[in-house]
Amino acid sequence: MKTVQDYIRTIPDFPHAGIMFRDVTTLFADARGFRMAIDQLLHPYAGQPIDRVVGLEARGFILGGAIAHQLSVGFVPIRKKGKLPAKTIEQAYTLEYGEAIVEIHDDALQPGERVLMVDDLLATGGTAEAGIKLIERLGAVVTGCAFIIDLPELGGRAKLEKLGMDVHALCAYDGH
Figure: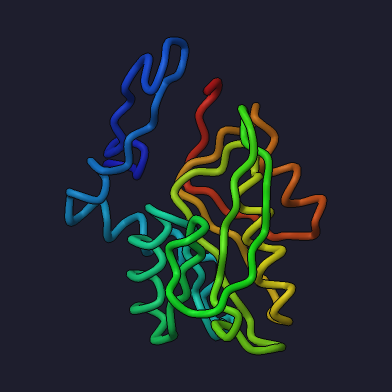
């Protein structure tokens, strides 16, 4: 029986030498693999009250939309700076070589709403931490953070768990 990991393609030396890129587009392209991933991402949160699903740009939109549909709740995107049309709040975070900014509409979440945050990959945790900060600044509560892939050596899970987050990942890879 196939696992989610069996559907993920590894591309060596992308985007540069020494990186083993984990490509989830092959998972998304396979109906059985995609359904398996969505079901497994949802499983730990079955029966928990969730008001909204937040997806981190960009593959988190694909996952988040499908999960929100399964839960019959709304979906909220967190996007790179300058991509959302209405009034936003923003959060800067550190990248390997510099800084980036993500945004959310300032009326996307209401105080007290329970949010499941999703993305495809957890590496250093910078983007996820920025997303959590945005969600919390709007008064919502992050009930869980779900990812397809965890790269534990890069410390993202530990960073999010230090923030008190429940972190769920379907598979993990050693190295980058």
